[in-house]
Length: 307
Image 1 (cartoon, one colour):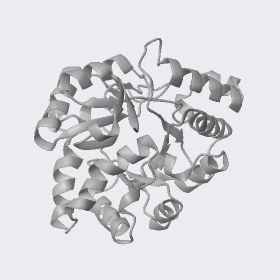
Image 2 (cartoon, rainbow, N blue to C red):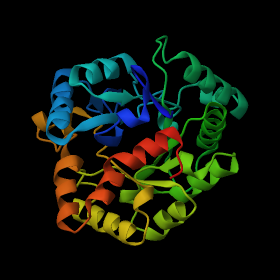
Image 3 (cartoon, rainbow, N blue to C red):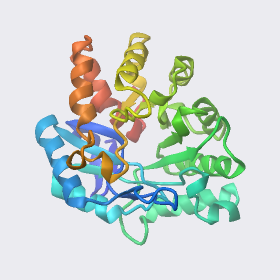
């Protein structure tokens, strides 16, 4: 039976019966001299929001895409998940170059991949908590830098070796198709790839090119209206669904700093499960399609199921 690797260990896929969030952060630290507020650390408030998502919207599983160099704290993620009564998946790999750890510049692709495989097999950061996927593997332009390309290639090799999937960070949606093609060239199957932040990229041709080849397209920044109005995101997603690609979409909010929490005036983790879901239903999206968008697609992506 297919399983999802969670902070509490492998969980049979058929036990993920509620809604899911494909790209979130439950603990992260991206602070820089230019951005002293780039952190998410209000654990009690995060637990409250996660519990509320479970109670009101049936949240069953959340994917935390905080990888190496992003202030990853897998034990905090596990505490939050247990307290909220949900499953959580943590990740490994490298974000975009600004946040790379020194080994990315020092090691070649094969050595980086071997290091990632070791963490996948033994646990993150000295714990026994094993990653359930690689992500969010980053690049920040139309094409990856040499270091970002090594990171993407290493992630693909590690994913092939361990049977995991890869979720990317395409900065503002840019370069997503190039990421996809690069990962494919390393032998990673298309259904094991999710290209991130595509709701920030206005060219639907890129979305469809990825989906046509069997990859997943992440509409994962709902609620971040300063980047793009949600109305435009919904329109793009509806067009994607109407074109026949509902099975290739992954949805989330990408909560990544304390200011996004509801207690601080943000839209929070529930936004895509509440406001976005209601908007999709009002637009005529039927229940089987909602089931794909909010549960089945993510479970298939994590387990490698193809249909």
